[in-house]
Amino acid sequence: NAGVMQNPRHLVRRRGQEARLRCSPMKGHSHVYWYRQLPEEGLKFMVYLQKENIIDESGMPKERFSAEFPKEGPSILRIQQVVRGDSAAYFCASSPSRTDQFFGPGTRLTVL
Amino acid sequence: GENVEQHPSTLSVQEGDSAVIKCTYSDSASNYFPWYKQELGKGPQLIIDIRSNVGEKKDQRIAVTLNKTAKHFSLHITETQPEDSAVYFCAASKGQAGTALIFGKGTTLSVSS
Figure 1 (tube, rainbow over the protein chains, first blue to last red):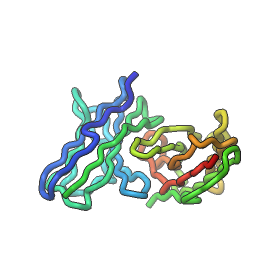
Figure 2 (cartoon, rainbow over the protein chains, first blue to last red):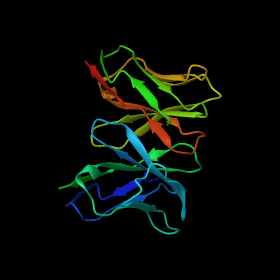
Figure 3 (spheres, chains in turn red, cyan):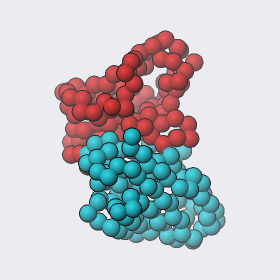
């Protein structure tokens, strides 16, 4: 049973470009959470999605960030017009039924 | 807003000693408290969790305790081994389990042989 998959593992973007981060949950998991981790910090919640629905986006910056979890395919976290402050590790977690959250290996975004 | 405080930020022990990490939380509605271990360059790995209807839970060398009245919970690792060296994070559910997790800032545990 494969774990949570994230790609790419490393992403480099120049300021002003778009970043797309993908997350494939574990088989049978319909709940996806995105978190951001800055160096030497804990993880900060961004958004919680179920298939085709955003349940809680209270941690998401109001501008430039969006997330989706379509009926088919992975969940996508999209960051438009990236700035240096967006450089961080982005983790997604999946859960089968609003219980334990299992994390992927993360995408490390570097903005030049 | 909701907050989780974690102490200490770094912890160094000798192999075979015990290690204790403590957390406090602010949201009275939190009812789920997981602990994660993160190794360098990897994602957090769930190692143990506890729910609010239980005061203590044990899994081999790892135990967690929860005091809901005081809003404290702790991780205890006995007979530490070098492979236990990692960053450990506590977390509390934002309200009911199944919602966002609020994380502490982490404890870097170093176990020397």
